[in-house]
Amino acid sequence: MYNVIDIFSGGGGFGLGFRQAGFKIRVALDVDRDAVRTYSANHVNTVVLQRDIREVSYEDLVKYGEADVLIGSPPCEPFTSANPNRMEDPADRLYLDPAGQLTLEFIRIVGELKPKIFVMENVAALAEEPLRSYIEREFRRVGYEVYFNVLHAEDYGVPSRRRRVFVSNVEIKPPKTRIITVREALRDLPPPDSGLVPNHDTVTISMKKQYRIARLRPGEALMKYRGATGFYENYIRLRWDEVAPTVMGTRRFVHPEEHRVLTVREQARLMGYPDSYTFFGSKDSQYNQVGESVPPPLAYAIALEIRKYIDEKDYRHG
Image (cartoon, helix red, strand yellow):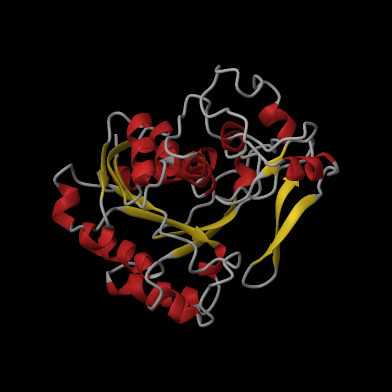
């Protein structure tokens, strides 16, 4: 069994996929209290630390065991076009934005731990110039050449669209699986507030918003908000027989037929989480943990490729 350290671990979707693929998550680390509670509750054999990565050293992590693989998802807000306050200069997003600098902290930890393989998830903008060159340069400084593996979650059994880059020292090309629609993802859930599955409580909305939601047709959005490069839709009524749009922490979806917002559990299903996976914190925090995570089926597909690579490498050098 190979060991994993999971930093910027969030609620644990990335870690869940690796655990399902047979890896042992030795230690996970995140600064958010609610995310740490969620990770701890769902990964009972993992040491979960609530720490600021900027205050964490090599010694803080390796005392829980050596890492074969390092995974993590530094904040994407400095780089995503959905952020209207994103810095104009790409270099500033990485080197001056305090949240962007956390990507450099991931690279620092890679240099200190020297894992066999690392995988850093973020928005696909990191694979575009000039950010790509900056990232390559920083990884070279700690001794690694990198691949920018751009993957679409919907190609790996996730019922929602998600285009992300997985920066790694190995090429990652998992075999694609079949498409799963909203209907298949949600069809067997009990009614909200039934108490039969966790995080499946109705969201309270104003009468005015409820009236407007009732008039939405499939595919229509209640509102739009400005991002850095255009407008993004929110409160979108889903279509039964399509893949859902990208799940985000702040994005809410409307049920394909019922005049209500999807529950946290329903949005978690659109990310491929099992119903046994429980989220903690306020409802907004729960939505954020779901929307800001790596979908477990995609993480699982990546983990299988990583395991295959390590197996082959160890065999060749055995």
